[in-house]
Image 1: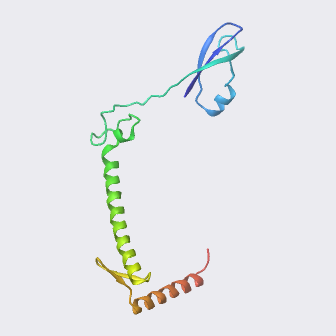
Image 2: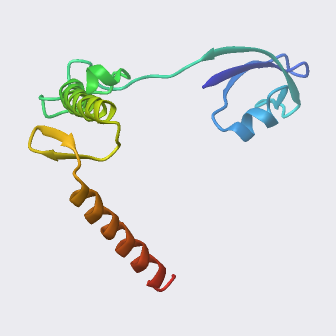
Length: 148
């Protein structure tokens, strides 16, 4: 948050104001009422952007108390890394299964494949016919359903 420094010509006071809200910053960007004489004080500089992270960096996941170091990886190291590893493993498996299906599709020249366990094969005519019937029934049910 910016700290604005102002100088009042009327009483020669120099003072700082910490402006937090956007509307305050817009209103008092160039000038601010002097706290001593209430005259218009001109801004001389923006001195700093100050912020503070409270808490102990050594407090983190596993200690029962979450710190607030401002570095997410330090404050919550265990759960996020576990979730990341879990997601990475799941996506790796998904991509391997997709690559296997794509290979069978390319070799068979069809998009229709069937999978039983780990075995992937082109779908037979009966399976394709049953899928077509199921899709037709689903489409019919959607058309006859009352609209909201």
